[in-house]
Image 1 (cartoon, rainbow, N blue to C red):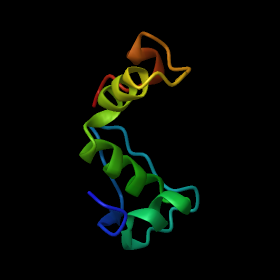
Image 2 (tube, helix red, strand yellow):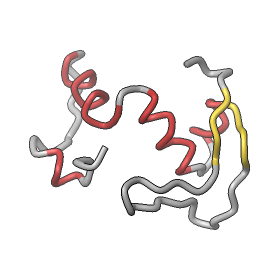
Image 3 (tube, rainbow, N blue to C red):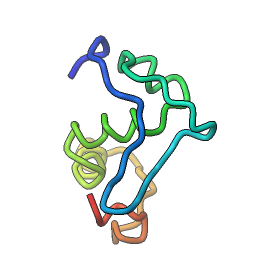
Image 4 (tube, one colour):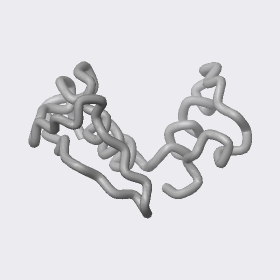
Amino acid sequence: MSPDSSVLDAPLDLHGCCPHDYERDYRGEAGMTKALADPMNTAAIRILLCAGGPRRIIAVVRMVGLDDGFPKDATAARVSFF
């Protein structure tokens, strides 16, 4: 992945959980930088999954010493189904 990589902003179904953009107006393929700068929730979730999922990202944040503020029990943050 790089900032110039493209990511899809389109409907997404994760085991029955269907996150969506606020306006439900999907934009299709977008650059990763634009997808994260604009409110493209499904594209951001796809980026998160490509990066290893929420647990992996939380582990990296903690490994580099950042204060993540995430609960120790990831299920409380609704990431258990990833």
